[in-house]
Amino acid sequence: MSSEHVYLLDTEALDSFALKGRSTPQIANANGLTVRRVMQIIRDTAKLPFDQLRILDFACGEGVYAIEAALRGSEVVAFDVRNERMDEGVKVKERFGLDNLRFEQTDIRNVDVGSYGGADVVLFLGILYHLHHRDVFKVVRNIYDMCRQFVIIDTHIALHGRIKIEHDGRSYEGRQYREHADDDPEEVRRSRLLASLDNSLSFWFTKESLFRLLNDVGFTSVFECNVPLEPFKLENRITIIAYKGEPVKVSSYPWVNDKTEDQIREVVSLNHTLSHFGVKQFVKTAVNGVLHRFGLELRRI
Ligand SMILES: C[S@@+](CC[C@H](N)C(=O)[O-])C[C@H]1O[C@@H](n2cnc3c(N)ncnc32)[C@H](O)[C@@H]1O
Image (cartoon, rainbow, N blue to C red; front, side, top):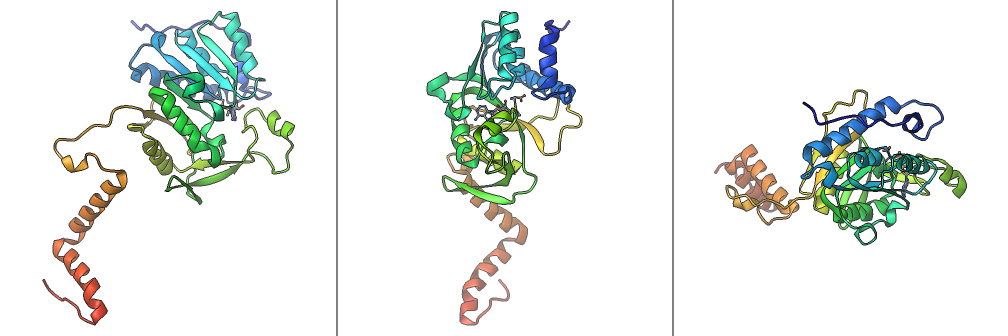
């Protein structure tokens, strides 16, 4: 028999989840599938049961994920820079006596381990793609520092890398997305409840670059979630789980250990070239590279 059960919420709460910051119910049904997916990931992969988890929900909106986790007994802190939708979540918390849930009006760009401590699970849903590339690296570093087990990211991605941005000597590809016109006043920007707070442009990583960034920051394994299913999820929207574990050491191929990813790439690309062309061809090409400068050529080895 399942130990799962439905907590009976009231119409006011269900209506606010159905609206999701818009004036008419629209994506509510589809959003229910993302809520199911996120809760299932936590249930299936957290090392502790819900009632022993500390969870941080970044840019929580009305706080539906935070409320779901708090109903299951987790200690949750949820923050959003806007209070319009979050106030709905505060009302639910109060009506249902969820003392284990705290909402705070905060800009997530300033949240770090010093201000909010660590958490077993970090929820980073619908927010990565609202950040400007000036801010995104610091924020991802902060969530890594705060995370004890894993971070769940649900985000738009760029399907093509149209521009490159550099950080710490590394290059990441993606596209820019316009959130506000350059001359939109502050109050207009703030009134767009589902958008970035102030940055006119945000940066959407390609999937490959986002995985590389999570690796560069230190996450030890990163997965894309496909089940629970989300029919009609956009092609450019993904749910990923980034785990913070201890890097393994390999006994069967010791060369892999204690190398940077760039060094590993170098070894593998050399192996690839050798197996592709054969050792003789590889040596011939290398020697001819030198001989050609003197008008000579090696025909056979
Ligand atoms: C698309 S909604 C996602 C809400 C929720 N996480 C969800 O998945 O349903 C984006 C949210 O990010 C919030 N937000 C945007 N920029 C923020 C910032 N710098 N700090 C905190 N919240 C921010 C917005 O106010 C909005 O509630």
